[in-house]
Length: 276
Length: 272
Image 1: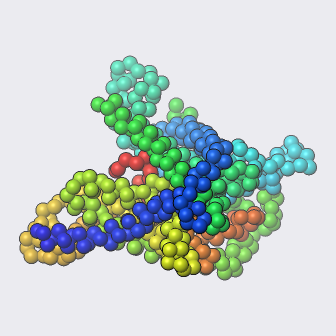
Image 2 (image 1 turned 90 degrees about the vertical axis):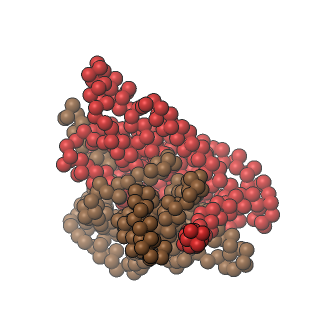
């Protein structure tokens, strides 16, 4: 039995080595770079320097919160409608939902640009019907465009987990609520919404995390006028001198996201109690 | 009520698809214009296929996806086996959580941390930075690993232990038991994990952006590079091809299976 354990240990070792080398070590390197300067000596300069990025953090959090809330408001009813559709149309709807998810984010953002650009479809259409005279309407570079980009790119990630929760929902709960005199709205808010909370939490995280860390969306649709956290990090890594600042910002973002995931998990944990 | 829901779904899906449809439509435009459709033409597609860089990028993407999905599957099966057989619950849970880190972290943090690892090691051994095909393979294998574990571990958990015990009793070595009894049982999970890895690797832009060098550019990196400054209509052609390729795969692979589950990642940290 001892020998068998040793063999098992030997078999597991490639995985353990890989994990230590390529999952744990990289995070230690982020820490190391965040707390050193360009010469490699210990320094708190990068961490102290973070205060200059306060505006960036506030703006990023704001944009991604708005995008997340809008995605929820659009996505929840969509998931509900999808779960109520017939089995045949459900599989079609799922393909429609998943096609954007597996299509590169670059492609989707680039496509959205074709709509919002000053030579883009919306601008052209408006001048076509004579609303714009000899001028172009350029949405690129506005807050709205960046937030719209986030909503457009990540909406399916909100819908899918909620939809999955909905389809797992036991219909008898809803019937019971109706029998006991709930009207449609009451059933929605007191039965369906709480029971689909795990899906909601997944959806919120799956929109919030990529939104707050994006840089392609803000680069393309923000036209360079918005520096979100992702852009700031990306820029620091163009040049070896600023790796330390980049590491410090990444570290803060990682902590920020871990905290928000932790808070979200609280909600799913307490939900278990409510159901029982 | 039925009608309201139908109208709502149609509306949202139309909005979701409007940009993609516009791009598909104008990729066939003879003129380089989003306002006038001057006639059907495949010239943007011709331009794309004459671009050696695009073809090289496609080839690189495929090589990387094959290599990294294979290596992630091998490592992931080993990992799931190790996690399943670990007696102490907290050790198993810790192993699983650590493996999940690349899935939980935003891609940019994974990319940055990987880059710093390679840059840091290069600095320690005083060598030139060595970003390129090998760092790409390592990074892709690493971020694919949790998805393989996620699809293989349940298979190990549901498997009846007495099967492998019987094999051992009848004189199989542990290795032979693994290949003759356990591996065949978990194979469907391993295959779906490999397919997910393959797709994620093809799709990845952010992590690759940080650990790549110009000598080894994948398709998403190529698109990024092409779209930094200008709008290029040959990119609309490429976008169209990508959308149709994804559509074809989605129709072939049964949608309700593993692909759906895998995109539902970051389950806010909780285990499946």
